[in-house]
Image 1: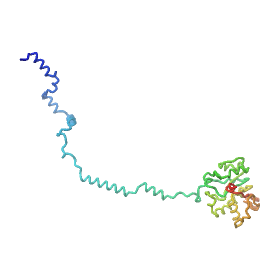
Image 2: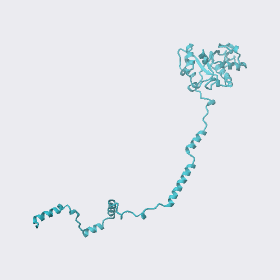
Image 3: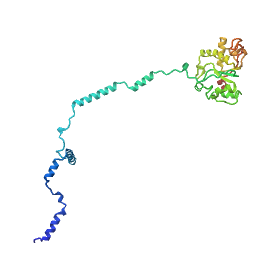
Image 4: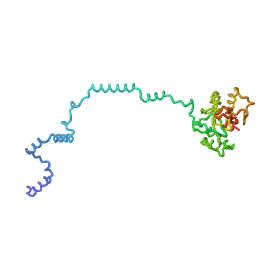
Length: 292
């Protein structure tokens, strides 16, 4: 059976795929197009070449041959190895700046404190015309640091000063320098060097303080002098008498007028007048008062 013309027409339409295969038709370029391609700029040709290489990475013609790859130089590798070893040797043998600094610090001696002991900020309060001058053994560490007499919280000085009626109220240690103005009361010590305990003082230090105290009392002329501590009166006795005080010779309270401190004979003082000295009262130390 022979197909009709209409059937052939329908078949051609189906086979043509409605023109979707036209994009695969090969058309030979014209002469002008070949000329434009050959005369394109070198930059465009390089860009096209790079695009082709990226789109066809597996192309054997674009892959560099092994012979074209750079081969590391044995001489350079050896040189780098030797340089690294030399650098490591230099770092190991070079002295550390940190260690050198620590060594210099450790050899620097610390500045010694004045008189070989702690710095003392305490000042005497001995203006002229005092009613009562307290003489202690020496400042404690806290007293030296603060500059206030009997500054340690365990010390009973300020409590006893009030309970005895000398002060109108219990003052804090910071009122040390107000006592002369408020009550005519001053303070000083036989030794100025601060220590943790009076037993750390030498006999020579104590003996040297006697003449210093006599001169202080002679200049300020207080009405009475109170020695706060048994060792102070023992030192005065030893220096004045040239011997230690006997047990039966020691007594608390007011001493004889012959034991007055800072006596000025007629014609010896600045004004030439006689001064019989400050009356001495021997009291127990604050530690002795604490015991009872």
